[in-house]
Length: 190
Image (cartoon, rainbow, N blue to C red):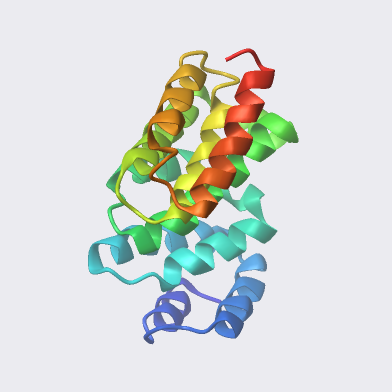
């Protein structure tokens, strides 16, 4: 697959789950196309479409290590995202990165993900958590912030405060994840 073929596949209107799966299979054979796919995510965010975002999320589910060579561009791009349709899959990727770094201690992530990358994720995740959007990005942000608070000690108290303030007005899904996160924070003495 070439970059041009990738653009053509994603520019053909809304794509189905099976088309995304097919694209991911092709992209797994061409890891050098992952940065181009993320550039499309940033472009789509401005256009209000999301085929590249969903494809990127599904590719990262299978090959998160493809993110390492352009982790700078990825974390710098988080602040640019405005469309909830693009934020949701990218928030999921942030959660996967945090799990790889903190929970799994994956050597490639521990070695290559630096404090400035994690700080960019902290900023984006708090923005998503306090913004008026649907629950999915908020849930991913909660989990990411829990992990990020293991590195940056100011994050856990702020996360706890945001969750307690917004708990009553949250959806069932929000309340469920918030309670689990608050319980974990309580276990840490926060």
